[in-house]
Length: 310
View 1: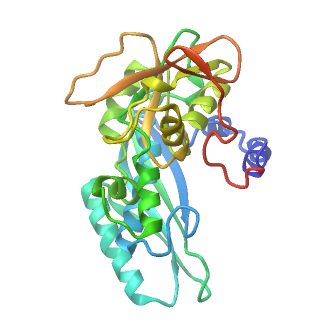
View 2 (view 1 turned 180 degrees about the horizontal axis):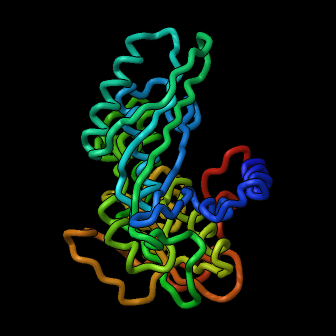
């Protein structure tokens, strides 16, 4: 077990309110009468979630997007954002971040409502946080823990482009531009989340990697997950090999959605251009992989975890 999960387990004993969902979700869901209030808080850290050389406007976009992705995974409509910002000795970076923040909240139509600023020492890694709030119909936010035996595992879009984009950024390369954009300017699947939420039993976003997030859904639901790796959509131009698919499914930073729902799930193209069945939930526990129907050994690392043991 990683230090992160060990700490979350400790906090779960404190977070006893039903809205906390036992800390098995990435959000809290608080009933408020006519609508449920969905709350999430995500942080991004320089050197962990973004590179020192990433444009500050893109860092602002990513901070907003990763928080809205948690709302998307509950089918929520964003209603506001609070931002925590570290003032380092670089006013130009601050202003460029603010410009990017303005662009992001405008693009996603979510108002900035406030937050906090603090001073940090010169040379300290930037640590940025945001709290996003959204609303959903009462009881309409699917939990990570709702999958049922026999449900299929559905995935929006594709995975792997952000991981490839991170590699480009590390090398100072700019092409393919779509890969770099997937890493620096992810797109939370808000419309897809709203379309899926009434039709699925469980839903979560793919932030740490398809394999690890699918396993978390199975664990929370008390079920095993069998994932058909050859069915997972990959970025155009990526070879369809087990090695390439494993790299894509463990890279993380995709911010697509995964959902548990019976066979036959259909959505209009206006709601969701692509949703693919990539696995199945069964009685039991753990994650198994197949390629063209044959068993495939899972990798030691299923995705990103803070302070995971080597």
